[in-house]
Length: 477
Image (cartoon, rainbow, N blue to C red; front, side, top):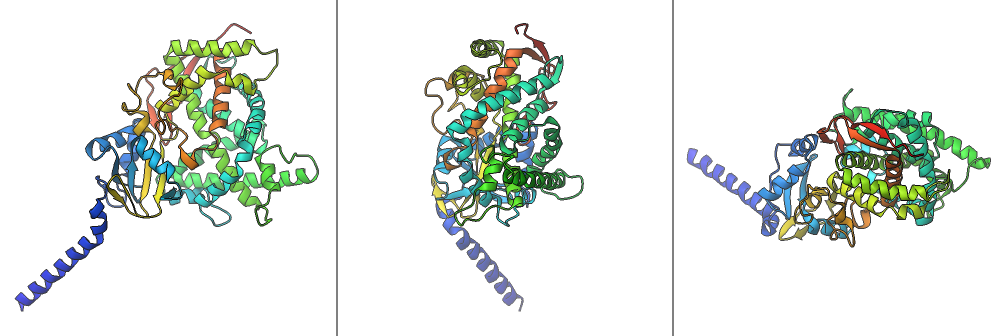
């Protein structure tokens, strides 16, 4: 009898092993990418996040590129099986196969902080938004934005920087970019009203990239509450705008809010107020968060590199001297800021606000001999090229000349993503960054109060103490 049970047990084990072999055969035939999946459930998420908290998110990528593969490696992030695509070839593959082999993906936590009133996913809402944005980001609209940005920048620097000895840069940069987003997207210009939104937006942004534990006091819980507060405030603004449009007190073309209220879809259906609030919420987040990080690091690098500051200062003063008293900056002025933009691009390379982004495999496919199963999450990392000596020699060296002439090789400089999903606000960001640089260097030199201030990436790089600096105003008018 014991021999019978032993035989049955052996057959059972053999059946299980054979089933597992067959289950994985089609993937082993092409081989899954090398790598490890880490701890049960959490995978390698904590290590992925902690390298950013320590200021070196590239370490997670480069350690595994060295250990497993410089092309693609396997991991487990945010509760999902994932493959990290590396280098220019990986970027090109993901960007050029959008909606063919891969599609955009966000963690389910994003849908909890950005709940759609139409019961659609964040992905579907983003597709709708992309169709609507071009009207507000086309050249003639951007030309109009320059003067508005200059006006807001003048007010911002007069209120927050002038007559100050010491300032903390990051919160001021956030104030500037958020003020611009409020003005250009929903025509909110009153600083008091902008300030009312600022703190909830900070909580919302922090919640987006936190571990999704919805318990009182957690960043995720605070993010959900902040989202609900902002949406409620936006609905009241939308209701008032609807009245103002009906009474002729608001212009149909003054901002994206008016456009949303007056534009129907292909079926003649207009968006509901909550639906508009959802979209404006996403726009206000995307319209200021990354640029504020870039502006902060421009201040840091210009403080550390006097020879770079000098060239930026000379270029900006040439433009300032060409303007009549009270004359605002225009589109042509910004086209002359070539060296300043090269500096900004080098900042975006070294301290990229966008660390990378996820895609999802919508079918099984093979990449460089490795099988990628349908449903796997795919991640591209800006640092796999930005800080890679193969693409940028001496990658830690600050060198704006990298962007002269034809600039970096395709798919190596990706601070705004690439392909069909390249950030539609890329040119908008360029304008607000250059306007910020113009007013900054025209007014001041400065030095960092904490020369070796730690950088934290969570999810964007920011100085741990917000970058306090001491200002030295110029004497010219």
